Amino acid sequence: MGLDNVAVHWPRTGRFYDPVAPAEFVDFGDIVDIPRISAPTAALAEHVAKTGTVRATAYTELVDLILGLENVLYATDAAAEDEDPVIDPDGCAWIAGGVEKFVAQHRSHGESVTFESVSEVLRALLGDGRLAEQQLRWLGSRLDRLRDENGDPPQWDFTCAELGVLAAFYRRCADRGFAVYADAEPGRRPGPQPQPQL
Image (cartoon, rainbow, N blue to C red; front, side, top):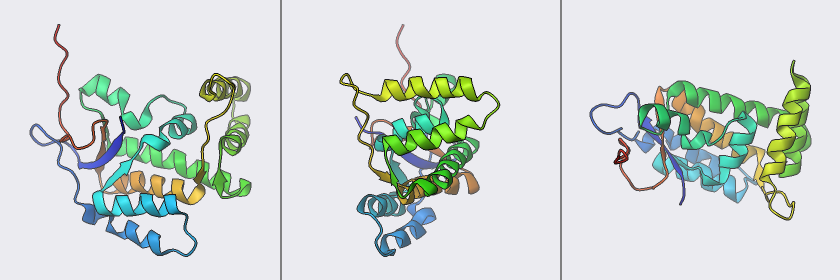
């Protein structure tokens, strides 16, 4: 099952969240015309421009690793508290800031973002912190958990430009006061989740 992150108006009015008009993201389409832009970057930018939505499934493991939490783009904390899996504008700013900082640090390692380069960048970032030893141990265990049963790492193949577009989506939402609805069943109207029957 795929995950879509849908820009919605904040706060909810009535029973459902109203999706933001794609016109709010139409300038993302200009990215497609940049010379030598990678196909995944162009595809992401074009989809955002046309729909106001990010197909987030491919980015969930990486964003969780960068931000140090689980299921960030699924909005699991919000879902537990509010019943609605929504990332509010402040949460969008936090996601954007974390990914932007990562991309800025990654530039010196090149444009291609792989499991190995992510590991190097995060080790450098965490190694400068006050709790460096503890955080580096945590990072090592997180990286180990991402490997498969044969010890092979995930085959990430992102670019800094692609992650820059991803960050720009959340930054746009934060700057304009939009939220993001985490739709794990694309096509369903953003709104309250059914309650379990006891």
